[in-house]
Length: 163
Ligand SMILES: [Zn+2]
Image (cartoon, rainbow, N blue to C red; front, side, top):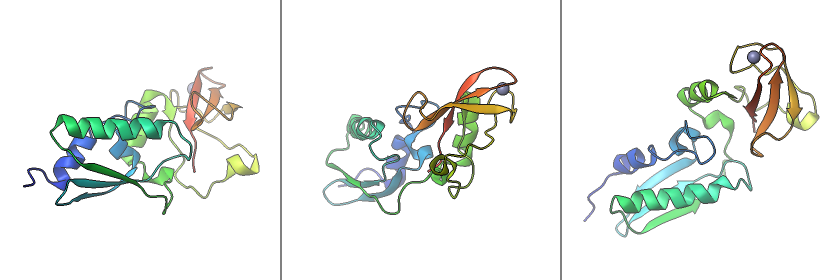
């Protein structure tokens, strides 16, 4: 007797904020790959963002507790590693909210490997829009972000790294 739908589940998940960036939901983040209602409960496929990102465990706990609150039991979370998550899966709307929150959203293309080659590139300041910025540290407030500083407004900001 299922009393919920895949869309209904998705709507619940949309209310769950990213543990590290509260302005975007885990659905915006693009980690929810598939929701499948079965006779026994619900199967949810999740693709982790950064491998070893400590936020993943938090996300799993949040998903289970949010669904249980709605009376949904037998939740089967499955980690799916291929295709690998990329920052391209962030919704356009989520990127805009990141910027307003003060985090420079990832650049469009994941073909950019500047962090691997060691070259830095121009990252737009989320506050004033200046391209006159510099990387202060490869690691910002979390391992998923790099710390930048704007040379115009002098504000430091996080840049959500592309992968
Ligand atoms: Zn600035």
